Amino acid sequence: METNPYSPPNSDVEIVPASNPGYYVVSIRKFALLFFMTLGIYSVYWFYRNWKAYQASTGEKIWPIPRAIFNIFFAHALFAKVDGTLNQHDRSFNWSPRALATGYVVLSIISNMLDRLSMKEIGSPATDALSFLVLPAIYFTLVIPQKAINIAVGDPEGEANSHLSGANFAWIGFGALLWIASAIGLLMVLGVLPEGFLAE
Image 1: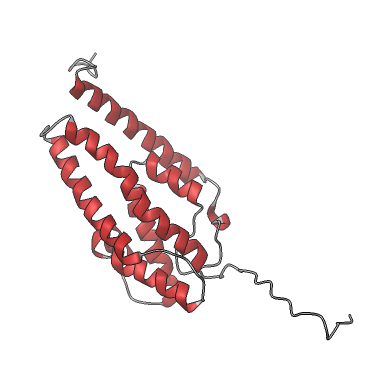
Image 2: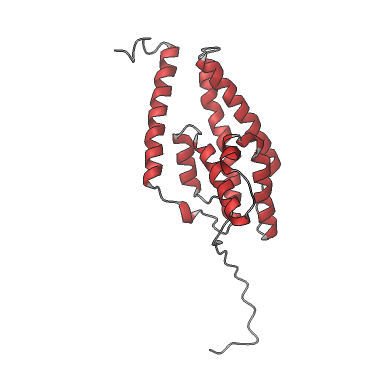
């Protein structure tokens, strides 16, 4: 194969996904579907998978499960590590990891408080409605880090994990039941449905 010594150098840069990425890769469409269908419960699994992948790639002795359950205490650390990986591989992504982590923590605390108030029927139906309204805000604080993760590991579109599995469909089915139960509860609080609707 002959090469032309006077031809300009090839500057095309191909992003190749790492064999051991270190974080949980998932397409944004799949992430959004699982997050909203499970009323945000997916975020706990999301944190677990990220810390599990990080543990596997670095060998650090961490406990992914506690970090997932108590994720508000480890969100800053995870986002900072993702940002460090981006800088290490010289992959540009415009985001504010510290601000997003802080936003996630604050919104998660607010969400938990609203859920507790709603369960005790304090401030209903306002607390019930606000609980739903907080969900998109929490999603925003996580979907941007997911975009950063995908870029950091060399799979910007999250193609390696873009298809729904059987387990995903099971979670979606479970989430659908949660949505139905939540909707019925809210309609009962608003007086649209009678108190004994579920008993009929």
